[in-house]
Length: 542
Ligand code: NAD
Image 1 (cartoon, rainbow, N blue to C red):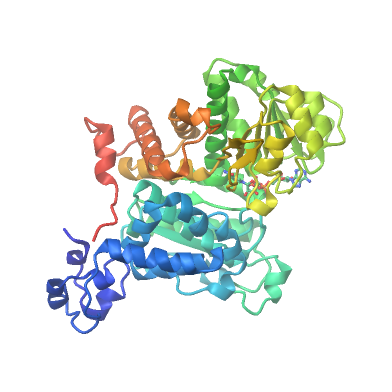
Image 2 (cartoon, rainbow, N blue to C red):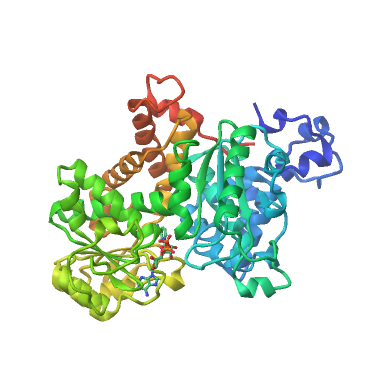
């Protein structure tokens, strides 16, 4: 059924609802039928012409942030057209709608704010969070992406302005995997901010108080989860960009109560592990023969290390031995047993070793073959560090994963130049290809978007009761296995962004099968899983 036949709205109400509006593409018959005569100019466009018009406008804009605002307006005006354009050229437009542009969008959110695309649930709503959720116009929400804005990308505490992140992330659920957009809900838990600049900024949009902490914070999260269970009983939750001390405990507390995951920990882990598995496929080496050095031991770093160890364990390496292959460096240096007050998440990876002074020294003493940066410290993979990695391995695996680009531990050009083109490179934010002495190198992007949309589609179609870490290992293996020899020949360890829809479906099919095999699906197993998943994919059609 055409989308505009799924509503009783007519006239301007229909044109103002992005879910049903198709602008100048309403035919003359539809204009009669829905009371639109005179509310549109005479011209009737087809969707291709609309796309041409929008793309022409996007090109004419001077900065990515202007393009972000334009896309944001389009999403509020005509949802189908927004997704048609985003899906039509994900390589070009995803960096505008999500990272890296979304980082700047959140920093300036108070100045570019237009209309709510989600719910701002603030500490003023304590005791009434269920009522706030009921204000959302959709009744059947299946995915909430929620942040408290405390650790937005690598940019720190942006308070309520972090809303840009769940909005962008959920747009990618739809654009990449076809999760129906009206079944997703972006949420900011506005518990204040400790960002002094924002507290003083007259345009700051959130509660102008310092952050809620301790038991008050915990009971606010508890009330939120209880309210979601009550108002949207079929809903799953993605915890997004919570600060390190809260991220793990929140996930652990709620993951068995409500299907939920933390993309910074588990999604990052899966995309990191997928990159490592694909890089090893490319150079025909085994996990068992590698040593991993993590620079930055927060949610992302320890998340990758944990999942990597689980994958090694499944491959027959005892867990203790797998952990001994992983070395962490945090802001205080190498994580060694003589250090006190180490976070629980770092403890499994402590080594009996003396402390070392620099990252280059850590690379030297560990003989690391794989270096992963999740430190948010730009340019920390110096010439000395990368030179040492090249001394440790013929083809060192170098992943500066910190976002946005301004936080990257090194650039693609640096990694390739300093290793004479030997590095297998992937970064968190995209880098352009690099030409050195007539050879072109294609940097990979270890973007979580390869994992979370497909995984969330699998949860949506199976109504999975819980999302175990093993689901992320399945997603990682599926993604690594789909990289072709032709892509390897170019140095790519992830499928090109242009193929993101296909990659998301590969992940969705593998994880859907996993949920059925593990008895976690709450729907009947279909005869043909791929056809079942495919049939659930939302299409941006008028
Ligand atoms: P986090 O705050 O949990 O962790 C950051 C870690 O970096 C902390 O352990 C901190 O101690 C460490 N650090 C700070 N200064 C350091 C220093 N001087 N030397 C060594 N370590 C230092 O944040 P996170 O969630 O782990 O994210 C970290 C970065 O990774 C962010 O930039 C984020 O955007 C990026 N990230 C990338 C991807 C991806 O590319 N797929 C996914 C998730 C996160």
